[in-house]
Structures are given as structure tokens and as C-alpha cells.
Length: 152
Image (cartoon, rainbow, N blue to C red; front, side):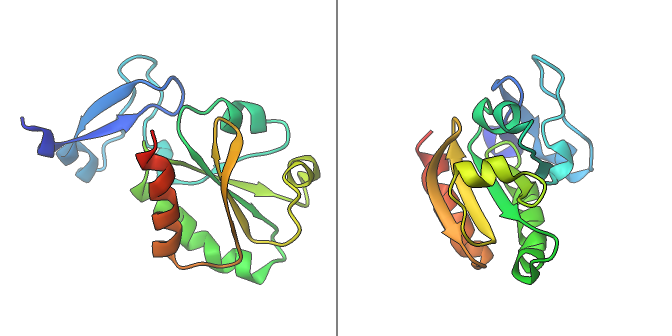
């Protein structure tokens, strides 16, 4: 098997790099980390982050995190949701995508001085490295994420 037949996926829990055959992903099989047995793709869905889980899910993440700060009453936030789901699936193993409801989690929103939503924070080791405010096209979000992914 040559390297073009595999995808390198970093474990969101322990940081181990795993070579996963592309054909297994295409078949819909759920790859797990060889070291800690954590599912590698997390279903390709954004992770729900709260004030209580921020340290564990974002600050200690071995992967960069794209965190969507949103609210259920925000029309533009709802427009952005499908784009974030697509990015979560496409970038699984390279970037972790999370969603934080600012109404239910005001501490984290306040910590990052979020004044308007949707706000997308790009975080590495819990530190903000980029901020995208308002609805942006998927390609622009992916372009901005590429900078943090290539800096690994």
C-alpha cells in the first residue's frame, strides 16, 4: 500500500498519528486510534463545547480547533452551521471543529471578548491565532485554517 492510499489522521485525544486506508473511510468504517482506541473521525460532526469542557476539549486538544461561538436565535449562525459540519467532516484528524452556545456559556464568550456572532475562533493550545467574524464562504474559512494546519 503506498502513501496515497492512506490518510494520516491525528488522534484528537492523545495526539498519535494514525495511517488509515482511504478505502476504509470511503466504506463508512469508523477508524480508531491505534494507541488509545478513541474514534478518529468523531462522526465528522462538530463537537459541543461548554464553559465546563473548554479546557479539556480546546486547551488540551492536540489539534487546532475551529470554535463557532453562536446562539440559536442568530439567523447568520444557523446559515453557517452546514458549512461547519462540512468542514468538520473534511478536516477530521487535522482540525477539530467545535460549537459553543454563547447564551449557555457566557464565561468563554466573555474571556475572548466576543461582541458579535457568529464568531469563529481558530485556537491552538487554547490560544487564539485567528478570528473570523460574520458569515464567510467555506473556501475563505478553509484558507484561514490552512495557515494554522501548515504551521504544525
